[in-house]
Amino acid sequence: GSYIDDSWIAVLALAVLGVSYLLSRRLLVTVFIAAIVVGMTAVSIVPRPALAHSGDNEVLAELDTVRDRGMLTNYRDLEVAIVDLDATHQVQFGGLGADESTRFEVGSLTKAMTGLVISDAVERGEIRMDVPISTYLPELAGARAGTVTLQELVTHTAGYAPFGPTALSRGFWAAPVGRNFFSTELTELISEVRDGTLDTRGNYLYSSLGASAAGMAVASAIGVSYPDLMRTRLFEPLGMMSTAVENDANAVEGGWSKSGLPVEPWVLGADAPSGGVVSTASDLAKLAAALLEGTAPGMAALDPTTPAGQSDTSIGVFWHSSTSATGQVTTWHTGQTGGYSTYFGIDRDARTAAILLSDVSNPAISDIGIHLLAERNSK
View 1 (tube, one colour):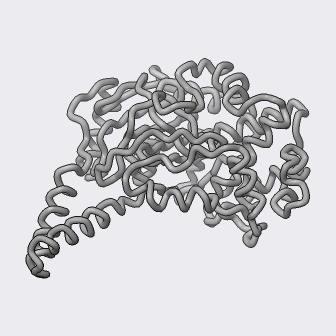
View 2 (cartoon, helix red, strand yellow):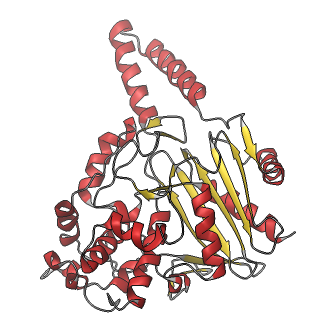
């Protein structure tokens, strides 16, 4: 989802209007001054692609093509990984202002990673997808929200709200100034979930709240913390040693909103299963290769089971699968925090993948990723 709405522009405009009016007491002068200040500020801080570049010349040439198409507007640092298991060079990197070892927040790609661990736990016989979530989170016993199953949660059909009301209320004042408005304690997450009405149960409604509950439920069932669950079941087995659940604000540098507002790192606490992982292009390429080879833990997570709101898209265990007009099937997930955005897409038939990481929260990163994957498959 899109979390930073860049309403700081409106806040700045109101502030300048107020000060200007107090100083001049003339409405036209006030509006004129406000328009100039806000306009100059917005133009001066809008993100622009970094000039420094590194990596494979073929990937950099593809980025040049993307730039020529006008698709790199409102970006700063950007790193790309292309995986092609049938190519001479199976993994290629290219970046603007970043390289394959640069850490980024991956946002909701965390959900897809969590989905792999959930499917792996099912294969181990540790959890079941068809029992009420209160089985693993007993604090939800007696609540309507406790009756939903993991299967409903991982397909976004449980009826949980996209976000909890507390996070939304904090975001009202924190988002416009680039502050983290999550850092949820487990008790707060449980409270947010218990109050849910499940009005949309049975229909696809993308829910970060539901993903957080699913991840914490599985960690509880296995008897470990969520960060340790991800580390021991996914990151370490695949050699993703620069990937972790973000426990403090020092894990990455702050990112940027699409209009250039500095945004502090997001430490999500109990909401980590919905978007709290930091990673690198190098590590995500390892994940993509393992998925394409079929050797990653919890491979069943990629198999679609449920319609996902669009006729060409369905969902497995948090992983979406979409079929293009040409018949190309892409298994994918995106990610967006206040200051970062991510695209991760694989074509299991072509044995290719495209991964993009940016330090700007820009949902259009998906367009670049889809383009790069299609270009690779056309060669």
